[in-house]
Image 1: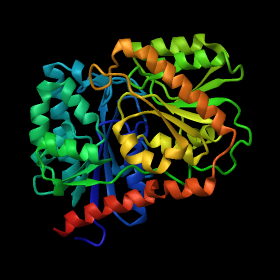
Image 2 (image 1 turned 180 degrees about the vertical axis):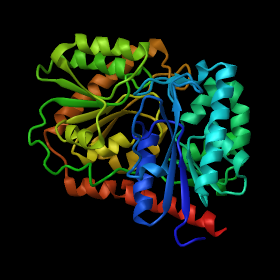
Image 3 (image 1 turned 30 degrees about the horizontal axis):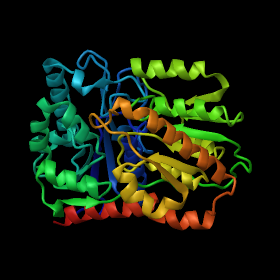
Image 4 (image 1 turned 45 degrees about the vertical axis):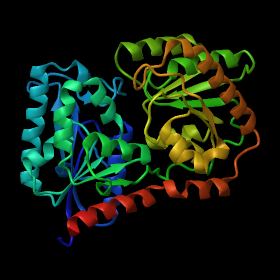
Length: 412
């Protein structure tokens, strides 16, 4: 191992705009402090003039551009609705998929030849992660599971076999919680010693309650994509119901989306007038400021890993309402339970599509949980107790776990 080991970070999406993109940038910042020599590969629109990734120098950022001559479609996203214009993998035809694979293979080959990494850290158990060993089978690869790869294997079963066969060659896998670790072992057929649980981290230098509004009123916050899978339509139903009892109620929405579903939700929120305040896509600094002004943060999603937004919101002093998802129950409830109200999930027809007859009861339960959280918020939050509860979720803690995986691989 060299004095300054070289690590290549690989993400097939745009950096900084989704959970995996935020994770990528946090890893880069942490590794910079510890002296790693770094470069990053990301997918971006052809129209993007400058690409910024976690403070890396421009010459160490290697973007693959979509929407141009060679890749004439927007960046494919791991979710059906992304916070930017994107393509769904399930909509790519055979020719487009061949273009996608070939472009990434050539791009990675060029970057790895130029940068000569000692180690690769890829994000998502999906197509790009499955190609790395084809190019350099001798370089150790750590693949970070964000759970959306499992969903894509269900949606795109014609691609799942090649993904499994390609990814299982990678050396180590990082899971957010035990449920994901079990899925990795089952789906890829890898032994448990090749899977490490590392959790998710938040930036405690950004997300904190210092300078928070003394009176948060009846402001509630949703942060995420304009998407039915995130539960946003039923949160809007719940807000309309609650507004009859709480005239000062206001829903603040941080995020955006693209496509017909997002457009429909956008029109609905606009029609709700002052009851909904839309902030669009915000930076982490702007999101933290918004959290410090709201009383309750709501995550009504039907599918998540370990949703870091709940940890960030609590750090900023919000009460929390969320659906009873496995990652929340396993990783967050044991430490955040006093500040977190859980809403039972409706039955699901597929990974993130609810069974329609269950939705009225789900909306009613969601409204009741938000109502209760608003009442509890008046009592404030014990900042010292919250600080202790959130200590395991700081990025410093999570990065230390991940860096040890890197070092173990380089040693062996």
